[in-house]
Image (cartoon, rainbow, N blue to C red; front, side):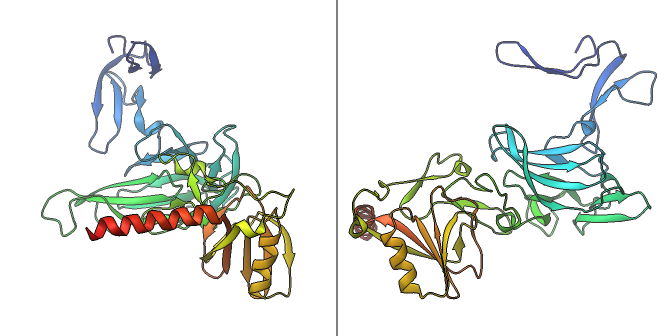
Length: 345
């Protein structure tokens, strides 16, 4: 930093990023107590550059994000590449959580918003431990809140890789009553599985998978008879472990249905029957070479085709019947028996 710039280089010495502060009179760099990394000058009260003005996925107490700023989630907990979700402080005054397409980087749709178009000013992480959206009329919209003192706890608010904006605290001393680890205290859009249903794309998880929500993390799962394209990047979705039913011959005898409760892919319908009973719903899917899943709920039956999108576990959506090959089912049972024998040895 001999010329007053902070530079990031790759292993071959090539510049990957620079603070663009050459010639601005930078004398030193400092990490402030609030976590802000600054490039300071000798004769100015304003820093030439500071990390608080260029946030990534996290905000810290005393940090403010003005109109046009945004947070961008990491792709996974261990991969810091640009992820699939953003929290945008829009120039129209609205604070919005968006799902981002990985290829085009376009917003697929919002799954939470402050609904403050024309009045929002900035996102503030107050030193008292609350994250709020300041409005033009000197009122605030609370986003998250820790409920504990910044004197006793380190605090951060992060847009996590699963798309949920969460606030965490960490005890400053071992004398704290909490465990010595980051603890979740509040969140926004915690049930992203049901909050996000874009009309295009796969949804939170990839095609043919489904999303499960809990307080600390949302996960992507494959239905029985399917497996992940990439075990390390489960959001990429699932593929069938069997050859799909052919429409050239009657192969319905080679397939059966796996039942899953409270699971649905709401935007994959191509046929509906009403009124109908459960047995009829199952039979209609088995005999239809296009049917990959049937959903039965309160006397109605929906046929769904591949690829399945926006899968989620959600109370009250009924039963899902997943079509799988009997050969795959037989193999699964053999693997389960081998595992039981291994455990009993």
